[in-house]
Length: 87
Length: 242
Image (cartoon, rainbow over all chains, first blue to last red; front, top):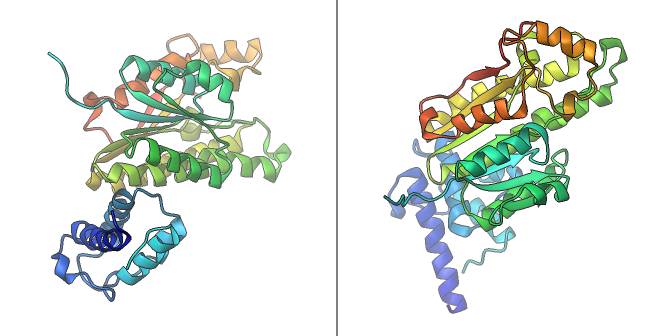
């Protein structure tokens, strides 16, 4: 897969992981979406989100990462720290 | 008829000896694929089936627990059962117990169990089902003179497990505690004959327990037959009264 396609794919995977875990339309997922800013992103959904992200990107996050994951943008930053490449 | 269900994947801590090793044998017989975790690699390799995964780790070290689960994630991508059998027991009277001994009990019996539950539950959440068996103790429920640090740590495991049963139950994850009475293992090898006789007389079934007695209950909790059991402390003590 080309580098650009990989980056695109990871962006879609991130968006889909959020949409699946929070049970919302993928169109609602943007960088500003934050923990507890919508009813669907509560503590239970946060657990599911972590599991979904770990499954999608085949990694295991640190507890500090999970606590810090307060928005979509922050989630992307944390994944980048773990070697995931985004465009 | 051939079953198409995937083999259960089960991680056992403290798998190198005693109750943990007995759990390895029981779950191998039940068809599980195992991840055996302990410090003694040689002992683990002697117990492991060819397709089992052996991980050498000191669970008193948080970074080694995380590395262990990263290996599980890479190797299997899922986990069905976690059996937290690793534990420490140092008998001493209250006045003779150092804070380092208390900390060691809590580090392995409570913190390591907590962290393994935390990481395992994330692997289980992916399939919205899973099963965790933690080890409490008869003395954690009823107390025992000369074992204050151990009793406190095992009581903590019961509290932890009841809380997790409530928190993880909605996600299809069961959490229970097995609370052994006096079980004849290396952990209790220092008990002299008079103590053993005394404990036997206090046990309704008039015999001391074996690691196999406990492993059989763990195997039951890891089966579909236990699918509606969570948040329980199951005594495996032969009717021991303290």
